[in-house]
Image (cartoon, rainbow, N blue to C red; front, side):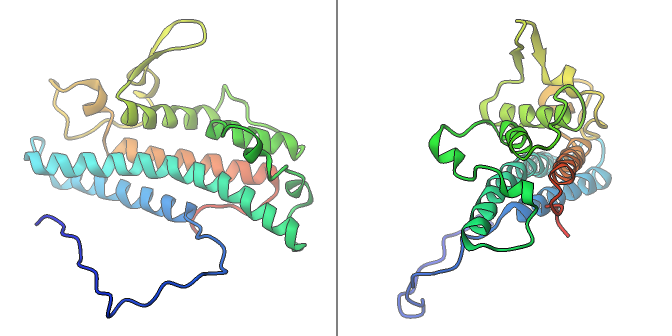
Length: 227
């Protein structure tokens, strides 16, 4: 049944009031959503025959894409909210935050165009005098691959040229990272059909968790995943 907008009722709805509370925090909810969608994708693969009906395939694709997009959203929301938390802590004089974490210039992003997500993490480590990630190794390289996959879902580009001009593809970069879609047939394309499966969704969750935990360890701050 298609969703319908709920009609508004001015009689029952409470009046809007100005709030003095801080804006809501969403990064943990994004990670929860990524885990939830990944579980749904894997469960559907286990329940369906090798040739599922079109509606089941659509649900499965929605779960996998939801996991990928939510995992990437967790990374971006987490680092953005961290800067806001540190700014609020420094302005209010709150104790208990790691000294070197507080040394991050929390107003930096307002003075420049927003940089790519992973650059924000690297700059935070650099300014906090912590060890930056090796961009050629996990978990940085895995997360970079996840973001390339996210971009492919948003822009429809599964191939690109690297800094040397060599053609790269998601299939080549990610094919050995996880088990492929159990619902795909041999006639289906590598991307999106074979790559976008429960294995990919679970991998997306694992790589952002690993990256975030490693970042927090380097910054000597509490982990930012779901408790």
